[in-house]
Image (tube, rainbow, N blue to C red; front, side):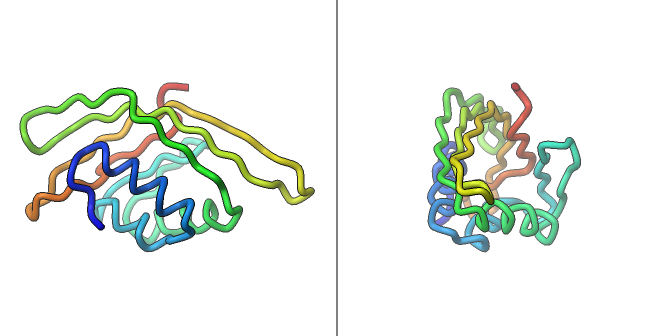
Length: 125
């Protein structure tokens, strides 16, 4: 199921990560989309983004997204403010929790669906 609204990008991201569907998550990004990692490195393009998402899915993370604001620019560009939280079991079996405040640029595609152009999960702290 593709994103039909800007906020759907985050809703579907959460659903697909929690469901372990790497390819469905990758499909939410434009071909040359960018995903900023915790260390500041940028994964650009589906192959690089797939590697990041595979690691996320491998830890069987429970992700929760909360889109707190959507700012649209015209009919084909939007900025999302997403407050997210994640919990997973570490290698030692202990629960690890983390959270962040993302800024994401999404763009309407020619078929009317929306995809991430730039995703920075750590942009707002």
